[in-house]
Length: 123
Image (cartoon, rainbow, N blue to C red; front, side, top):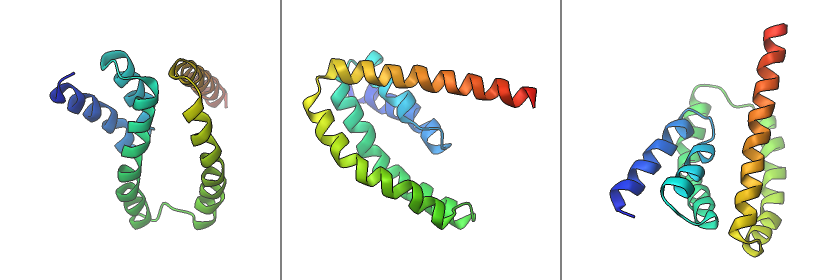
């Protein structure tokens, strides 16, 4: 795979990430389906890029007064605690299993989004 194609896939995944929509939901499938990258590598690349994208996003949200300190801590602390066992689990699971789990996650997320939108329209 050429460096140019990988850069294009990163750019396409970075657009929703910059808008706060979760770039991994785009980047991981792009890397898997278009790039032919193994699931573990695609997820690892997404996590690594998230580290660098989250820092300026956090600073921008803080500057705009959009952060609630208690809310950030309440969300970040459990995520940090659960992430370590998740790393070990992902290390031992085959890429095929991770791919299916990620696909189920995306289907669940889509279902939740549709139901939430339908309920919002009724109200």
